[in-house]
Image 1: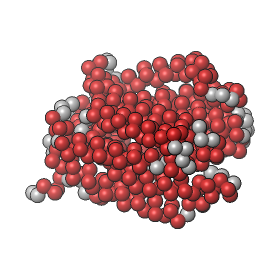
Image 2: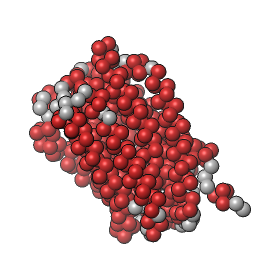
Image 3: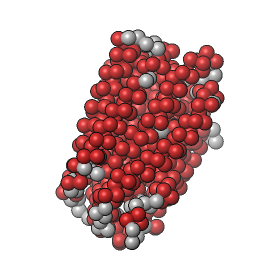
Image 4: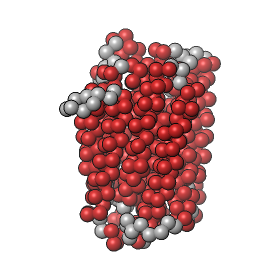
Length: 446
């Protein structure tokens, strides 16, 4: 049998990536409907939901990062065919995430007014943000449950269920948003609180579906899953050893964005408006990159578990080519219709015209991102998450320094400030490539 039989084919990679892409698109539908509906309620609500939403996502990322650590371990055990350990990892991670969720719930429920007060200048936006968070935080328990089952399905490369789950969640959210924000179908009219409550309820619906599907469709015996035996700190510690760096790394990368926007705020309201539009489009177009990143992570860990380290670099190359082909086509199409895409976010013709140059900068950065992300996730997949954290840290420091120089020191135009994205992806690509090339990751045992 030739060696080629064991490297996952393009077809196989695409098959397990597509459901993840679809589930991420559905999650973004949730964000876009919130934005579109609250834009009709008022500017205060829109601004508050953006700030409070970012705050919620930052703390959610702590659980999400832990889930990625779990996913890397589950994929490794899956590759080793050590199936009974997968259930122990999943069950103990559920215990841990429930505890973390409780901690964050108390923090937000009782202390968010104190935390947010110094950060928000406008009283109206401050009050609306608190309103939003008081209802949004109930979703954290369901969100963490979903994070973990996602890790299980991606780690065992059976990703089809993610599509169904995402469709259910997005459908519930659009319906509940419409009902609760505006008070339709006999529901109370709750405005921004309605948007937050709608998101929390749809997370709960999605969790109920996810757990029911797992109980009825997964071979629980094979994976020793949902046994809920006593809590084993040793299992959680192993997961934490890997995921602690990932949790920090996700938090850092969001903090980097936040700092970048603080720099842009110093350039005035128009620059901030342009950047907000571009950021929203950017995040939607990044979806395939995140999905392929997640798959790289899982495939690399599975291969190392099967003792096929030699296939790691070829697989990373394959995923990168697929990712590049997909992102390249998206960018090419977008390049011909920038005004149409920008007009989804604003109807002001002058603002649209001024946003176009920045839009082009970001589109070209996306092409670089398609490679950077795959190389970087390849590093995480080898379970050397501390190395990945250092790469992210070095990259962010260089990126923010460049952005600050361009914006504050040289006072260049907004589209030139956004070219700091090129620096970000270039540094990340080079550092990740050098590390993978060095082969030092082969020694890591988890």
